[in-house]
Length: 166
Image 1 (tube, rainbow, N blue to C red):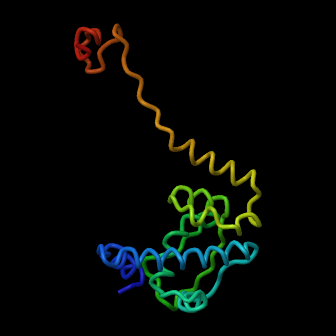
Image 2: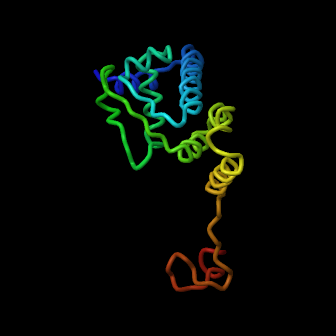
Image 3: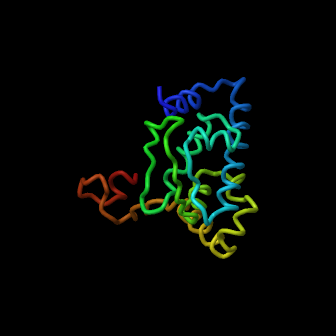
């Protein structure tokens, strides 16, 4: 069984009793890894998956979960073969930090997008612009309702007021 399968199984099989402990473990690991990446943003995070999980003192399956989350924040469409990774798989993460910051907003992860280390990676104006872009993407625009004298959208050919607008 691959680490990805183990990760998905772990994620999907949380019970009310294990849920809080699992997310606490995962969030702490995620914050530790992201803090390191942000503090050393001019370097790639490289090594074997098993070695990196030891370095960050997390279980390999938790590190696999981190990789699953960061995959769509890599530069130039780089992607990891997440589904077939093992502890021996080589990792070289070239992170697009603007994409990563946006994706953290999208994942509703304030514990990540509010890390102090971001100040050394993206200036405050860039972070504000990205958060504003995200918030704009969430604005709901209700579809325009037909006016009383507009043709009915059902296609009957009648005016809306004489058809579905009654």
